[in-house]
Amino acid sequence: MMTFNDGREGGPAVTLDEVATAAFRATRETDALAGELKDLLGFGTHNIPARLAIARSLAVPEAPPPAQGEPGRTIRGDVLFGTGDVLATWLSLLIEYEERPIESIADLQRRVRDHWVRGMKMLSELLESSNRSAINFWRRLAETALPSGRPPDDDIGPPGHADELVPRPIVLPIGPRGLDAHNSEPVRFCPVAPGASPHVAIMGGVGSGKTRTARFMLNALAAQARVPILAFDFKGDLAGGEDGLDRAFGAQVVDPLERPLPLDVLAFDETKPHALELTAQRLRDSLATLKRSDFGAQQRDLLAESTERALAQHRPCRLSDVRDALVALYREREKAEDGAVATLRDICRFELFAPELPPAAFFARSWVVRIGQDLPDLVRSVVVTLVTDALDRWLNSRPDAPVDADGNRALRIVAVIDEAHRVLGRKLPGLSNLVRLSRSKGGMVWLVSQSPDDFEGEEDDFLAEMGLVLAFATNARPGATRRIFGGNARLERLASGHAFAKLRGEPAREVVVWRAG
Image (cartoon, rainbow, N blue to C red):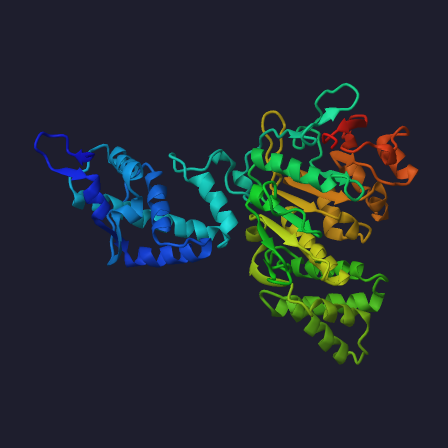
């Protein structure tokens, strides 16, 4: 029979059988927190969150304070810890933690209670900081529940805070193979190296592997840098599975039809001169891009004026406030409602945004925004337009991201648009600014589309701003292909798993990205 005692001859002994039948309890407050954790994470019994809490506290080197509060429900030792070797392992951990034997059942109950109470408070705080997302909770727990009490690579700091960003080199393979098709040398993309552009464009026809490659490379990025991601998922391909971006980045998957995005898209810095007017003009310009034929001069003026009124009167301001202000302004001017009012009415049929989080808080977290086919085209476009506008205003107002001694720049956020041809050509001002201006701020943009032709409708030459342009088999016009990859590139003739890759400052080359078959 195994005993745990004070090591003195004749001293009191605690047997496994006694521990198995003993009653353990925390506090009522701890039980309430455990109930929330149990329901959200889907635990079937109360002993599982209790075990998790005790283990979390044991990972912190500082001893827990004595537990305070009314006693909670009791759990038998064999239910709380298990039996046999499993129970013995728990007792060994508790002995090792205090570096002294267990003297009595009361001593053991005290140790368990103190760790249980502290650990549950830590788990509850972690759950709240994870926006009550089970995926984010498990990812953050894996990062923080270490013997040091700190996440690995703690010097990276929380994403979204410029003064805590720490630059480091990043090397991304071009797919699982990533070999030059002619000499079999590895081909790697170094997005934050000196002189490099972090932006990526991946193109290819249906079934070519472009989204698969984006997921693979973004998983490699997540393994090297703790950086938040904002991904727009038109097909539902970016999340789910072992290599889903929700798993790699701890991202919360949000469908605006099911739950409004918790972002204050019309937030602005009131301390800056003319910030209100500039925000109103940006919204006017963005909404104008959503309409196939641009708003007229008078419509644009009325839209800007009504937006200024709404921003001045409402904190926070919603799109419905802008709509109401525009309708009221048309009535004041005795104007018949036209396309500008109709556009706002159509957008506001759905509650797409809830101003729960300011941009700094929203973009410090990771999100996969699902934009399904059941949403009207106008509504899908407005989600991408206004979120990229908000990201542009926030990111490009940050200080420059720091660089290390070797010139590697820290990343602040990654923005990904799958099926980007759905928004390319609309001349979205936020997207354009992110591609042109965000590099020095630590921004990284990934555009996954079907063909080089998709980019020709943009006023800015997006592809010239990319650090990596990767094209799988697709039917593209010769002019666009030749301009990017040179005269010998024939995208339609590429073998399965092969792509042309153009790294900034280097000649284009054919790369074996995936093993065919």
